[in-house]
Image (cartoon, rainbow over all chains, first blue to last red; front, side, top):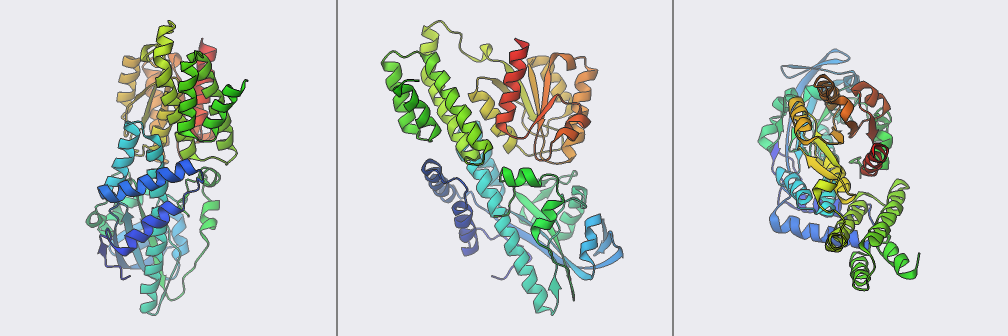
Length: 231
Length: 217
């Protein structure tokens, strides 16, 4: 699939596939939960709750210092940016599963349907992870078309890249065009959204996701309580 | 535990919602006391909590168990009232909860709210991005026994600390217990914020509240 710079991918075969995999990947094997998942899937389709969208830009970049990078006209700082060494371009991407999903989760809890609320959250998180993989792959393909390669993604909020860079990145990627708002504190709305930076150059470093997880203070709890969006 | 009691506990633990409710209805019809059935439900919940801790059950199972408990409590309510037991929010210990200033995540807070509610607490949920002064005003107004501060992002830590400092400045700190929870909360963060305890999941929140209120009473 070709990813244009602003892609409302709702109602596409990609969206259908993401939803199917998000639901199928549930860790709960109890038949009672599986049947609730099926109900959830029907409700999502009936009420059109899944409205994913992506916005990204590939921008020129240069390293001023290993932890201080110029991306287009902006300066971004963070110790983790050292991993982008060699990048002459950076892809800045924002993606969301849409606001109606999170609203449905909150309403479910308010109405006492905690199972649905929980499943919305679990499935939504899983879908975000799947979207992240897909966007990473598409940027890698785009880099190859240019005869270059791409690094692994860096995400605001990871150790070494503060959320405070998120408003700036949101402007660079025009996150608003995907329906994503960035608060002054760097929180994304809808909350089921994410952003990433991917360096592009002639020789880029890649690393397994687990390597970043090891440095995160939430990693043990993330795995234990399945907060990780890594499916 | 007799066969009927075991059947009720097992049906709840095994997530057999309809079977559990049918057994409870039958038990009430046969004259079993509401209090004893509620005790069985709580025993089942303890088993489910252990399975959750051991990684056999996950949050959806915990929520389904909570829903069953809530439905059983509804069935028990008229019988408890008949037996002269006090029912209703006024009799339940109050917990005030909210996601702190700057943070908009609500899923953890909602799960904790739900679990506290089905476990007998009267929860006042202030929502998300709750300003420091709002917490102070609401604690003064609602007079909870416990305050829960939720935050998923690291920016929440300062908000938690500011909220707790404001409650101290307002002279209310000694009257309440404060628990914090969320993505990266741990003992270091607890110390930093000045909270009394932290919880890593909804079951811990329930345990904390029960423990504090048992000591209090």
